[in-house]
Length: 202
Image (cartoon, rainbow, N blue to C red; front, side, top):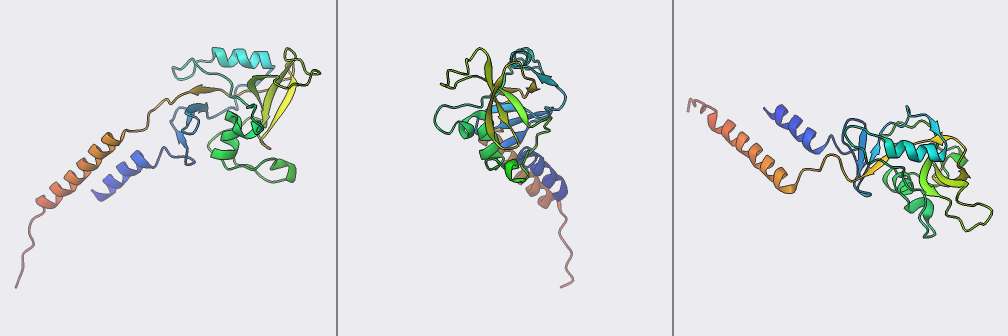
């Protein structure tokens, strides 16, 4: 009985927590509670695309009944664009990676994700003020091994990673958890009441 209750408890409270704020929702999807968005877990099987092809791929992707996928952002124009974008928050805040780890030969944490490459297209076109990089020709991506943003010609081929806003499997509400806990207490109480009294020789 105790073992059964422990298993149920672990399934309910422990199995979904991956990396403090990352939750494995199954079926190849990881939910970020910081960003309130869902990432594809495995990027290994989609191939490489030009930027226009990557945007079209994400827009047309239908996975596990969801068709509202898109490319993540890698640029936030606040002076900390490499850290405060969606790619940056996942890399730095949620997975605890430092900036430019690979530059110094240090490993990086990929968490629950299966990565196909170190370079991924993001949703942003060129947002630089440099007139030598017209937005119609350049787009932004993210180097996963060192946590930095890159600017590249749209005709270059890089890997893709899709995300969607929101969760695909809501975390149980507090009232649900309380009801579940009350049920466990009731089970324990019923079990104790059913035990036969011990015979005493004194």
